[in-house]
Image 1 (tube, rainbow, N blue to C red):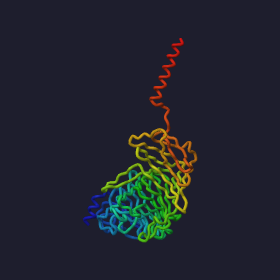
Image 2: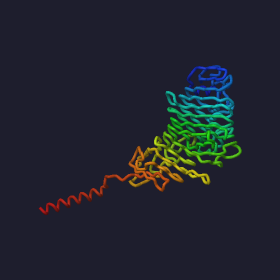
Image 3: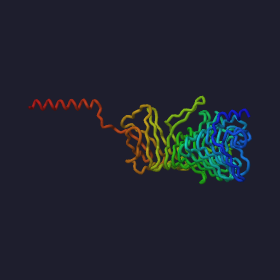
Image 4: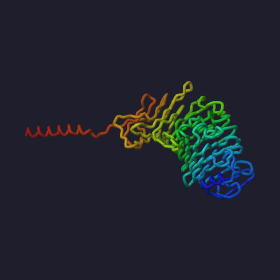
Length: 411
């Protein structure tokens, strides 16, 4: 009980209403002293998801801030399960939910579960930070963020304006399950996972997005900001995590960007402190399509620059890209490229199609010429300026003085 009181003090929870129906129940998290609205009571937690009386779907509305860090007597400390046995919904409209191990949405129920972040009057943030330096983030072996995983279930995560989801894993922890999975675990062919990025910021923390290879699994990128993405992948078999590695079962992934901003970057950790470098590389194992409403954000400094790589999968195909969006360039740390210096910001192994390379929209810092090189590379080249160098000025002035002198002698 002492640990739960510590958790209680660490949290700020707003709202006060509990509605109980025969087939559904909604809890607005409060600081109540009794009943199932009191999340400081150990009896109200099951795998990190509040346990409600009755049957049917369960909904938790969060309008405040608190931390699930494994200090309490949860069945699986620090782990949030939405739809574990019964389908459920968490609406995080404002405030912060900090989770120390992992989040799973609809693991073992035959309904539809939802996680909605943002869309409210103020900022809303879900921060999932692994606390272990080895092994998977959750002691039972579940991924960091898992959407639609088992049986004939369905799960949807929607990130909206004013919302943010951030994933963090210690740099030394390279376990293959510390990523964002959509429709991926046992019985993948029956899973229905959807991630809707329509607003806000999805910070993947230099981890991967992995899509289960089934038509019902999708990542819909229509707005918002996707940043610090190491790679975007698809896998044909993402089953029992103790039997095989999903990386051994690749499939062609297609990232369709229909709005929003793709921003490569790099997140590192040292001594428990996380640092973000705006320079990074995002690799798409398959194909990439960006429409006219999309933006690619490119940062450049004296030591490096952002890149998006679209890779061909051996014997499978892919490596194709279509880019009709715009580019937003930021020159960092006072860096100024020399005229003629170039940067290959988008490279496709097979082919790159750009509808109008001569009129590619380029915003931000610098003056650039865009070109399509070798049929597969989008290159930005720093433009030459019209201002002559000082030595040219001197020669021009000397020539002008000479002409004046000759004219006077003739007179």
